[in-house]
Length: 263
Image: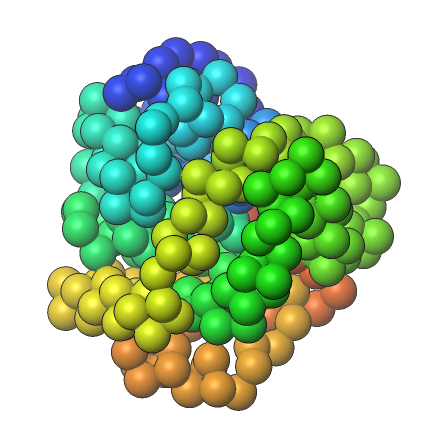
């Protein structure tokens, strides 16, 4: 996108793209260990299908050019992102998040003004993922913590990405131990049923405020999870982009850009 402004808002390094007009602005939240560079292919496609759309791409706390925080609980991080969006003059944005950013976008919209949430491949119920983390916790807290991230990365199917996107997924990332432990702290220390209750309340707040919810994934949602999603958010839209693994916005950025352009 042309005319990109690089700045710092609410202690977060951000890029502001596009110009203010009647269209709702978009806030982009990347996944754990990544940074705002990951949105490059999507921004290029968005500029083609929705030229000049106002977009705020954020480096989450502790990522990229943004300072670290003592803790990284989702509600705290969502509050800081909201401060940055407010400083940018973003009123009632479309909040888009990939992976951890999808959970963060959900928490953001439950507590702050938003017109829509686009969650890119992030289940909100931690269930089996928490079990895997708990089993791996001793290694995660050791000097060999990188082995846990490598295991996670193997399941993300970066092999399905085009070469340039695969390179971006492998380089626009810094999986530091403090980030993994910090952002996963709630999952490690809070029972799964308690976390499920929190996400159910978040989705209820989003539903009751008439905020659209769109889940984008690389494969069909598990039946139990889809049932939960349709129960807590009956009007939710689910889009499956086959063959894109955990990175639909990198594998098929034009398709994801068209989804964003519709809001």
